[in-house]
Length: 197
Image (tube, rainbow, N blue to C red; front, side):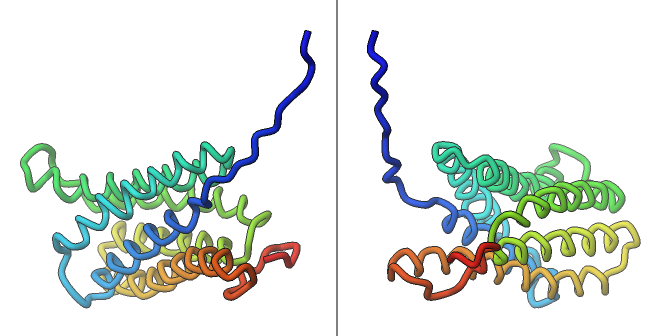
């Protein structure tokens, strides 16, 4: 009976920057709309389907191959969040379903906020950069949920500006990982809890 074991070295790329950039860039563009800069349009929907949605799901599958439960759960979940959000907008326009009421949207956003809060707890063992991303996302979901529940347009506009902070923080976290790897040193700090970058 052979008892020798073979260790296989993982030489695949880090998929997290792709997912963070997909989330961050799509979040920025949606929240420019929420802040009142432009209408809800095909650009936002396309980003939600392809980059925010599909690219994050692919990232989550790649994280699964790397045995990263947090990354798998986060990227696949938020990828399908974007796809679901697009469906909530498009399905009523196609006549396939009734539009969601304000309270239904508040429930949807509130539950995603609760999920994000639970994921935020996981980031306490990860980098400070991810803590900022998830922390600001919890606040964003809360503002949007309350804005829908109370039909307060001003609160939703405030959420738009807060969402820009969330989106840009995700872009930072993603591009920091890319540049740090390319240059082989800390170009943009991620603020790991053990002070390792």
